[in-house]
Image (tube, rainbow, N blue to C red; front, side, top):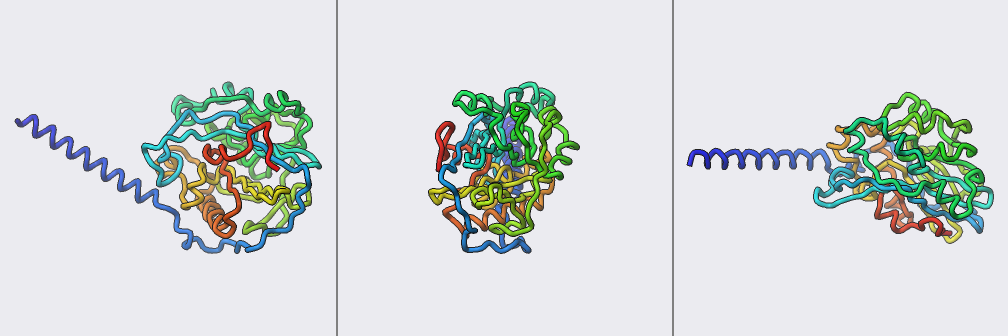
Length: 325
């Protein structure tokens, strides 16, 4: 009988500890209070002027996916029994003045690049590679050298793995981002992915507000493709607005959050994930970006917001070689 009582007490103790842990995580992972974030620029009710040309279109080149995780580890407030499989992709934007890639996804050499990570990081950031962006382009008659530029949302390993596959293409990056990456270490930054790049181009912004963001870079001068700074996750993280001839508007937000739910709630990445790995260069700045995008979505609900890794959002987008115009 005494042994049975001991087992019962241990079981009760474990249950209490689990409940306490769940309560702690629930408190840590509560939604961000958007009203408490002050000093954010106003978001205009009107869309900025744009003249998207006929022929402007985009397509998503899926290059791989996560080995799998649960929602509670990718967005604060996520469910522990809901599986998620974040995707790794590149976005091809086709404009009459030239085509560009926003991110490259996983490249041809991702296995050797990723091998420098330790066992724990290889498990935590495990992936399943698919056809690299360069190979997909070649298979459908698009010469990689014909691209005007590659614009990484940031220089984390899963966004620029394919840079070595495009040696003849300009790479647009802010100086702060290159410096951050140059000082960076695995698992976030893998030097082999960018140490051989020869065609760096400094990405700069005009100090003119754009939909609630402090600066902008109008890539083609017609308002159809506009880059904005989203520093926080990394020192030079950027987002991309796309205004199509059909009137549809998209905002590619990189890794401000990994899921659309993080922007809708709004919510950061989970406490347990943020403390297991240093994910953000400037966590307060990234939270401000989350809140500002949340406010933008409320002001302009017709805007399609695309976090880089959200597999459910990705399913609604045109997959290469299909395009949306």
